[in-house]
Length: 215
Image (cartoon, rainbow, N blue to C red; front, side):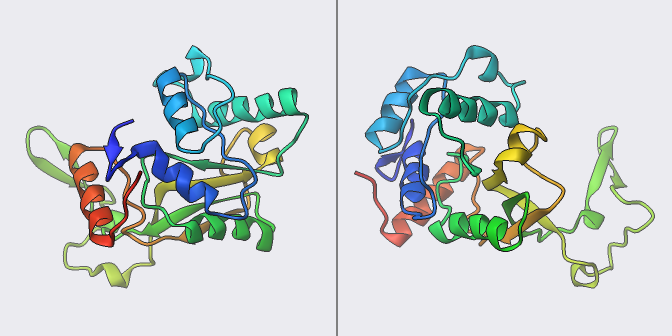
């Protein structure tokens, strides 16, 4: 609900979803009536409140998406071909990235797809920590401080911004990552995922720099 450059955080996700012509519906799943009201004011649909058991820290996102999908099936007699997850903590995602993920599923006959970005820090160069300060290589047999990242095969990490899966993959296989899973490479800037106060400040700076405003 917190305002980001003049628009509630969730509003940026609703706005980008509406801007993608490949999406038919924009539904918001929440257990909070105040968030539902804000989502509606931003143009989203919030026809139900999520049950408490799907609003805990232990609840899986797959179960949340399945609940929303079953609601649509039960109340509107519709079965979506593809279900997409757009998390509101990624307000800078582009319409091109939303469309790109959907087109991957269609063009590659994929079960599912998501946005990813090049990991600038290769996992071979990461550590565990033991005791107060001792560093232990994550991949001890392959680690070399002098080895350049470019010498390794490129590694991509999830952005957390866009996920999509076919109905069968989500509802019958109980996953957002099917056997035939594909990745759309997103920009680092649009992949900003807000987890901290610093992330929020950075998002505000980027939006102001671009001259983008809410209401």
